[in-house]
Length: 557
Image 1 (cartoon, rainbow, N blue to C red):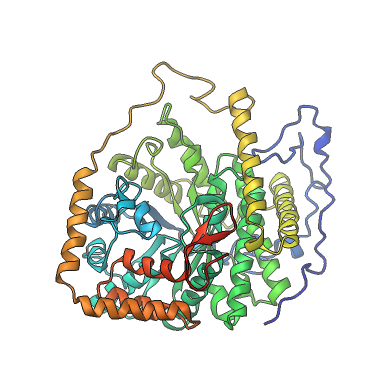
Image 2: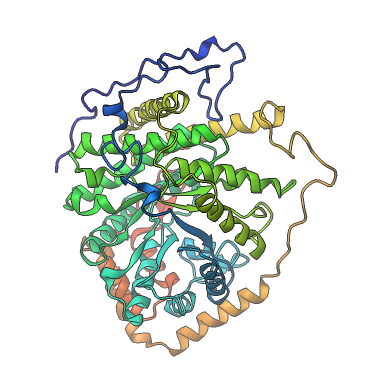
């Protein structure tokens, strides 16, 4: 399909609303700086119900992506977990599944995210700290021991090395006898937001985007139930972006991925239905509900405008995680209330799956008590609060509809700025600068006391922050290094060498690389060896310079 025009007929660039926020002499605004009027009335929102809202399950999906939403099926309760070794994380998964969790979500340590094995000098001091350490197929087998991959959906928060981790997952499924067509889950695989906000990039921009297109093409044929990318606003928001910026910058990246896939010859209808998104839920309750509704509507309109996409391909499905940056080390039990209100906004905003943070995560990885309470928070919302009994219960609220309009309009304005810079791949510095400015404004407001954070700059108690658990990771790191050494000793070294040579040859060419990555993990090549082979072929991305260092075909962004 060809790219269409940039405006949907009948959608104006900015709406005229009945509310006049400037009439509020107090200058009250949302957390993102959108003006809030003292009162909203029937004339405030300027909504055409048929054009702007529609019905749940129908274009433009403002009211939800499915006709019955939670009346038919509750959102997936997917608690994010990963720490230490694969065995420890596997035990936590069984603990959560036994308590009613309905999906798995894997957190990986920084060496795994950055393409280093646990015995690499670059991994020293980081093994198993931010998530689970995965070096080889052996670790992946242990991670999913006694878990039927044909019956559970798994989300993996991994980006630069996403293709390697998915290949490991498929290899484990093969050993379990699970056909690829039965595998369900998501890899985040969103590299542009790493350059913009998070920093776990490895390769230059262009070869990184090629890996994403290759994974999309492979899964569209071989793993049809797998979401090949979770386009993430979460990390953009956590870096300091406002709600409209979160929507706009996420969608700028999403449009870039769609464009690249179409240019690679993949029909939009073959991959767009498997795109998923990942958003944060922060503290401003009504703004967050409006953000989720605006995001659904805007994505549907963008896909229809640019690629004449079907309703199925216009449908925005998303996962939500409560805001890690909103948690405080001071009076950490206050975080239970923050997480609850954020989770409620995600549910009323129509999320498809949800992670609720542990109240102690500002201090350490969540304790079992905090992880269980976070899961119980979702279960109480689902089964005791009544919010799942009807679809989009806040629709028609004058305030919510007006906020929904404003967020969509503001996001479109940012998208226009990004388009003028050549799209997301050419606007990385612009988006970084906008996020930094928003983060600075937020921090200055906290420090001045203009923005109240309970327990931090108001209603403080003696004693300050709670003590952090000082876990000794040295034994874990030593154990993981020894495990990698044993893998290298017992594998067929010649088979590994051949698989890595074939991967290097593919990286210098233009064929789909995913089958070669899959061959390498089956041969017991380690994650670091596979990533190192690609680094040697493509070079590395140099932050701030817009390019790369190192040699090889495709180096340079």
